[in-house]
Length: 512
Ligand code: XMP
Image (tube, rainbow, N blue to C red; front, side, top):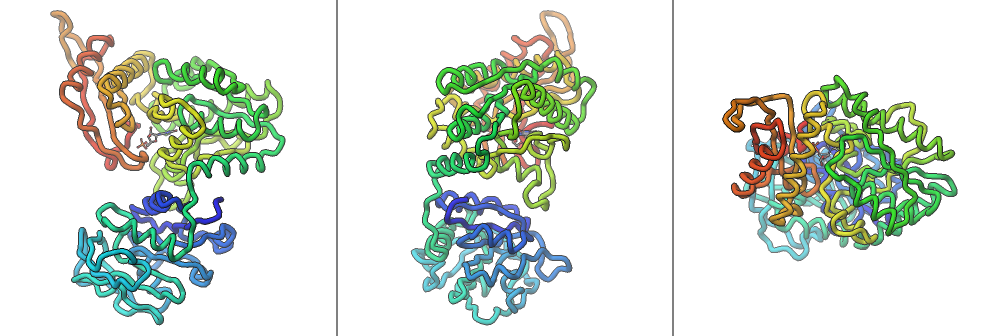
């Protein structure tokens, strides 16, 4: 854990994870933790400040989420945002009530610049509001430091106790000066040194891995993607020859997946690497499995079985290193246990209970763009650094329904065409992910002079910064046409090509 950190207590707001992102952009380490994290745990982290996120509840509701009130007596600065502000007011003796008018959207706010929170800002600024409750009576020792046409207490402070609250959301881009406010809080009020850089992360991760693992042996699940590759290289830096990497080909990889990556890791980085072709075994186990969550479970379980068998042959291993990232942890609801589980990412919540390894996940608190920065720092070539993310269960989550050899062939070949065409016009790097999916739906086509029936392939290309939200990419029509023509011409059994134009939410990136 870096020396200076700001904890964000998650009350279920849709922007909660954005607050941690903003802190990290300010080079201050930040973690999102459940709102009811026990005080002893918070104290043990020794944060320099705490932020209380927004959330959908009302503080006066029965069963409204409440933190341990001891956080206000830790003597460290606290900033409440929206629900967090109302919570500070309620817990410390103020009154919160339903406002007569809901305040939503871009709003002009008038600031009291004598507050340290607003140093360097003009008197009037635009902010993003989204609330229907407001403070009617301030708690003792607090003063209002901002107001809008609708809210008398758009920001409050008790500077003596370093307690602050904002009714609006500084973390969203619709509050243009929000970063300055968060910077004032983190650097000026909490006194954090902006020292969280990916360079410092590398040193710290290597140190922590070494301290944790000591002289024991580690096996790393290498997939060829940037996350597991970076994981392997960090562990290699920390413990060298005590690391063995195992690459399992589950038969659901992208076309020519990993061969290049594995060569680089063997030749340039001299990693101890074992390659296992388990494709027959995985595909046999997946026969008849159509449910996406069941596919994930089967793949996760089989993965660990293969690992156990392979590593048993090599001697005793205590640790399993894998490239789990922060969004995987959040989306598998393994953090707060409050967010609803969206998908069981096979490498987080899908591990079988009999698994004997202890987990080593050095990237568990990083976002993808941070991992890419680490990858560049440790010397990985651009083509690995910028490779699109690929889910652990591979093409299994891009094939709707049962996995058959026909559908696997179509999905793999069509995805390769999509990637190739994006690369040709140099927009591969702009996309977060680009692939093709296929299901059992068929449509009529004409091939030669014959009427025939074939699969419908759907192309999905999305832009995103961290995979948590995504938007479909507005591709040029000529490119879509080329992709469609190539897929129907080059892949047997495809008669139609469609393009997915839903964002996340409401869709997810992968179709299952
Ligand atoms: P969704 O489909 O949930 O995907 O919008 C968000 C990001 O996570 C990847 N993903 C997975 N990664 N195991 C993984 O390791 C999985 O089961 C899994 N499902 C989705 C997805 O590719 C995207 O980048």
